[in-house]
Image 1: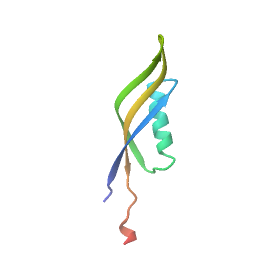
Image 2: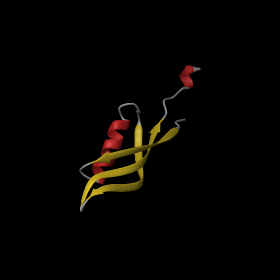
Image 3: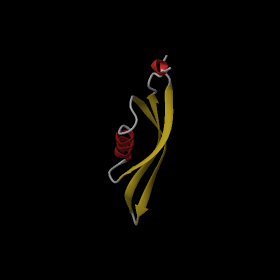
Length: 72
C-alpha cells in the first residue's frame, strides 16, 4: 500500500506564475522523489512602479513515500 505526503513550498520567477510553479517542482525534485502533483494555493507578485518584477507561488507538492515494509 502506498502513502502520499504533502509538503508546502514557496517559489518565485521573473517570467511567470507558470514558471514559478515549474521552479517549485524542479527544486523539490532535487531532494524529493516520486512527485505526483502540485496544488497552487496562492499566487502573488511584487511590483516596481508599473511593472511586475517577480511572480510567486505557494504550492503543495504531493509525493509517494518510499515503501518501508522491507525496513522492518
